[in-house]
Image (cartoon, rainbow, N blue to C red; front, side, top):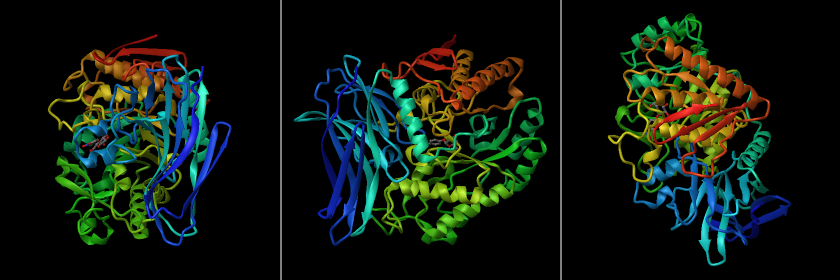
Length: 562
Ligand code: 9PG
């Protein structure tokens, strides 16, 4: 019962590509390939693609759509019926944030990042995936063409310059027939894990995070009050999120809400018996930050207007536009390493690195030979160099494919929020509304990406919110989300004012942790959780792990565990 793909050709896209020669070698289910510049001038390579056809496909044809970064939507879709989010009139910035390739998809194209599973009308399946991702992104794209349906495996080099005489080996592409999408995906993830030397053995993480109750209003007094209540809770890590820093970019200083400084907060957490954790967005800086003022030369530049610093993010709560650092400069990499080392020296053994997609964004960088994936990876490697091997590094807002082997944990979905569906009052973001905070959105990705847990890293499904007051979640929705975190085996961080929680909330946490530890142990032993209806509907309903089955209704946010 497998879907047959035939490799028909390859394509090269870029500027001054006349001298490029692509070697393609198909051996069984694996294609190995490389590109060399045999010409006498540099070439800028946007994309090299393998084009397959599906000679015997029967419609409808569905595909698993893995999103590009933590928050990007991960679901399944029907070819010919559904559309790519980029086809609506939207901000180029959003397309750059949520896809390897920022160009709008053509007409009816559908795509998935790094891997997909295709399923046709007869239930015939095939997985197509890149083995590895640190050197370039990989997109699998379905396209309707004169010769039938194309399946394109695109190595995205993002305009990286290949000098005369240089050769790049590309990540191999596998095409695997199979009968069960979960088995195919788990097998693929295990192979990538081995190829990229994934960090999969950090302890199961239980903790507390300030974000989903206090948001950017968090104060030192909130931390102190929760630490005073935390003694009875089974936390390992206690993590301060966004809101302590004077400006984005100045991570070693604090604003007036945190009079004791980052050192003082770390010692208070450690004295209470927990591992101090801290949030930072290390690759972006506010225009008014000390770092941006001291080092204007550290900013990447806009590709279309190189007199302007590159916008790395827009966020109202930080005061608007943030700039992206030029993370290809050795002095910027040293700055990242030093910042991480200083935070570790202050006592933080857990770093949450956020908004890190910015390093992939289109811009003018000092080193034009690096691909977007290599820029992201190089910046994370610098943080790891400074933080040391024993620090738990959590990726967030992070391109998944390029970070296997450097992070210990990874946010694999959009933000939860104290509401089930996306809040109608937030920015509409045409095409990308579902990347906005919603507990349903987190449910979707937690189920759809469950197979990555302990294969690439520890999955972080995002925080538990156990409170039943000061929230728009119903008690049933609180429970449905908590059980999803449990059966995913992923990291379990509580994000409530502990004063709002009593014995029933504590009992729910204990239930989550007992499920979570069991599923996590099975994943560590090689059996990750799975989502059996991944290809059946846009939002999956079912999660299985270690013999437990959770079935929920994503519309209402109710779920039953058996
Ligand atoms: C802190 C938060 C929390 C949270 C992160 C991240 O697209 N956006 O505008 C957008 C804003 C915030 C956000 C995600 C997306 O949340 O995931 O856990 O740390 O930053 O600001």
